Amino acid sequence: MTEGWTEIDNNFFPAYNMLLAFAGSFILYEPQKGCISELIDDDLFKKLPVESNNPKFIKAASYLRNIDPEHPLDYDQIIEDHLELFGGKGKPLAPPYGSVYMSVDHLYDNTSVEVRKLYNAYGWKSRFEGEIPDDHLGIELQFINLLLDKYPQLEDDVCRKEIRSDLAKFIETYIEPWIDEWNKLIQSNAVSDFYKGIGYLTVAGIEDIYATMKKITY
Image (cartoon, rainbow, N blue to C red):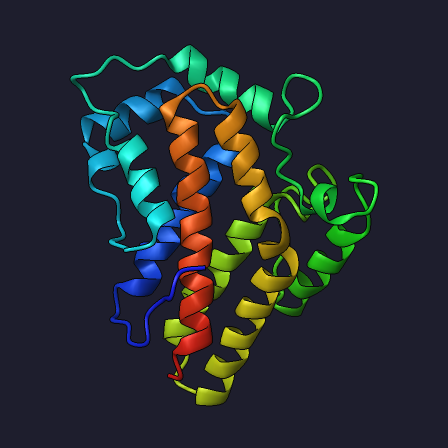
């Protein structure tokens, strides 16, 4: 785990929110050529919203910053990676479901139900409920973003402390136990620099948020 920050400014929450939304969207949804082309045209792969000394973030940046208008991109390979990694073509090579890693038999279990209880406690419901299990990493990142949105809006110290606690507990209970194994599968099976970068970016974002929530007191 990274050390995180003991002090943060107002940019921390929107920056990491943007980072996780970016990474999570490409885990949850099949990439669209037009969307990636726009990101390249805007040079966003070289302008990531976060600066971090986390080695995994640096690794992610080294992959993603290779993507620019001067280097042709194999869009078909990126789409193929998504399908192969996350289950669009038979058995996924890097399943994005926590229960697959956390259950004894590496099968889907009641982790999704447990995760949903915390979602419900915050009055949040995945738009994919009933279609995609709630322990899908892309959905879990959406929930983390919900808490990152709420935190700076609160003025009450007790409420802030509760969100810090819930966010850290959510990560350490439902994501931290398996996210590194998931990323190893991404790195072993992804062909594109794009998805290798997304794997490291996701882990780095989670680590930075967790470490910071454990340190800050305001």
